[in-house]
Length: 186
Image (cartoon, rainbow, N blue to C red):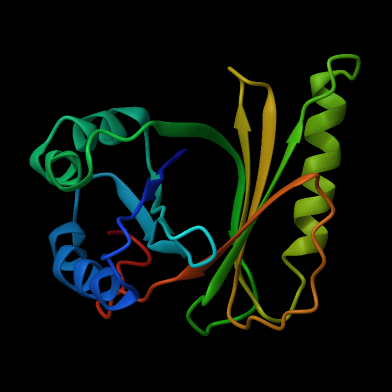
C-alpha cells in the first residue's frame, strides 16, 4: 500500500463552506475508483490548508490518479501542488466505529545511527499501543525513504481524544465529511 497527500493553501475568499461544497461535489467521483482504499478530506483551519490523504492499494493506482482528470481538476483550480508519498508500514482501524473528525500527523527523522529493523520494531510497537485508544478510528505508520522520515497519522472520532503527540513536527487537521464515505474498498 501507498499513502499520498498534497496540500493547497486556499485563497482567503475560499471559506470553509466552499471546502465542504468541494468535498461534497468531488466525493462521489472517487466512489469505486480503482485501487483507492480510502480517502480522507483534511483541512487545517489555522493555516487555511486543504490537504487530502489517499491510501492506495499500489503505486500503479496512485500514478493513474495523478495522470487522470480528477487530479487535473485540482491543478486547474489551485495550480500543481507538490505531492508527497510514503510507503505504509502499518495501517489498522481502531476500536471506534464513529466517523473520524480529526487527524494528527507526527513526523520524525529516522536516525541514521539506528538500524532500520530496530526502527521498524519500535514503530510496530507504538502502532500496536496506539490502536487500543477508544476514540481512534484508524492509525497508520508511514515511511518516506527519500527524506528518511517516519509519519504517524492517527484519525480520531473525537477532538478531545486525550492523546498528546510526542514528535517535534505535528500537523493537526479537521476531517471534512464527504457525506458519501468511501471507507473500505473505494
